[in-house]
Image (cartoon, rainbow, N blue to C red; front, side):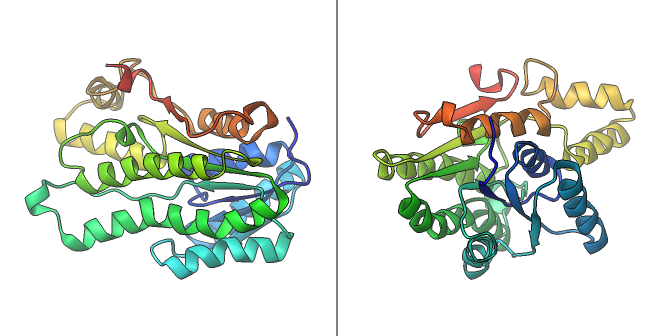
Length: 261
């Protein structure tokens, strides 16, 4: 499985799942544009690390994915720099938790903008070039919450269900082309953000870090183990490969049997 000569754009890829996907694609020879917020020096370290480790060209674009024009410009800049975008991974996401009646309207708008609308704008920007070359892989990172719901997560659940639906529409519209569109639906993944939740549970309940992990997982994820960014990266690499040419419009769970219940 080689992506030499291919170009990938991965949003939200300066940490966590997105960085795991970027690494998996770079390991197979894809040139990359990474994107995300963070300390500029740390982002440069990540960018240079990917380039040095895998011997590929890696660009960074700080597009704010809450702004449609910047989402589309992210794709356009990658096309201008590399001449093409073959693999688009829409990964960036944010979360906010509150009951519906208490959910701040501005937080709803922000979650929908970044988790759903950005997927639409990036896809719309990438499709013309993919259609011209008759090749493309669109991989949308949805969630277990794209398939089932949890209380107090109205915006996130609505957005991720929307991502699953948009993925299906994209797959239907490109069904007779060399372009595929699929969604990955992770459950709990051990990222820095989730580790913060674990630490907060431990502090709040006066329990150990392993006990807090178990408590977090036991509520939803029957395997009682986390998926990893690297595992999701390998799944994304498969979906980007020729072997997955007829995997179209799928929503693939990697959730320790969360949605099997």
